[in-house]
Amino acid sequence: MLELLFSFSVFLLIVSLLTVSLNFIFQNWKMEARTQRLEWHVFINQLKKEIRLADAVNISPGSILLTIDGKSVLYEKYGSNMRRRVDMKGHEIVLQKLDAIAFTSVSGGVEISVSDNFDQKHSASLYYLMDMEDIDVP
Image (cartoon, rainbow, N blue to C red; front, side, top):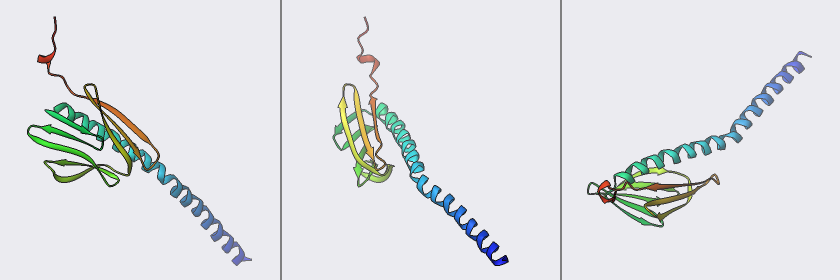
């Protein structure tokens, strides 16, 4: 009788731990999706700062090339990542687990659209700073 109670208690312990671990395993993708969203916001803030500092911008569908103080800063898709390179050197990953990236030129700025492996779609429009000398105020 004692062995039966011991076996039953071990069984209940295993089942309770199994349900907690399965719940954790199946909820892990939600944490990765939240991390992906946070990574997107950090990337957009970094790119917004660099676009505003840029002297020149060259936009193609798969990449954006910024000229800042004589240095070229390139953002491009590299595998399933987006990387940042300065003067065609280095390899800084700024976004991960991407399906598609599109850069589009809009009036006074650039629109960025991204879809990731978690079926999330992100887009942002970033605008250049205008020189105050170019504005004609009456």
